[in-house]
Image (tube, rainbow, N blue to C red; front, side, top):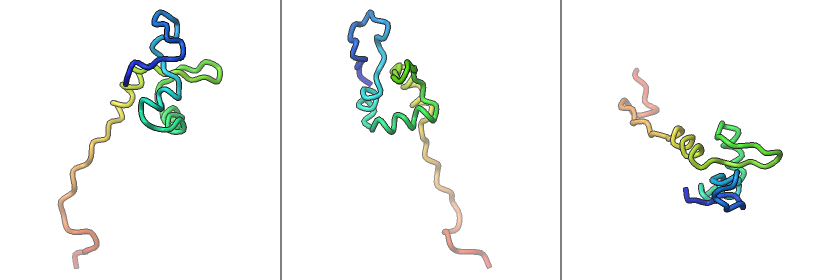
Length: 84
């Protein structure tokens, strides 16, 4: 994730280091609807009225905790063949 922040680019401001939903979607290269689905799945966000803000470090931790590791293929007989 880059250093994109809210429209308040003042690093000393109260909201410094936080991303808007649109900025986070751009960072993750996904739609804002996908961000909403991630919120419902537990992605951390800060709610200020109707606005949602995201701490990039916390989102990064959440994403990494949901890392998908492919399962190793099961070894056995081919599918569709049953033992007689």
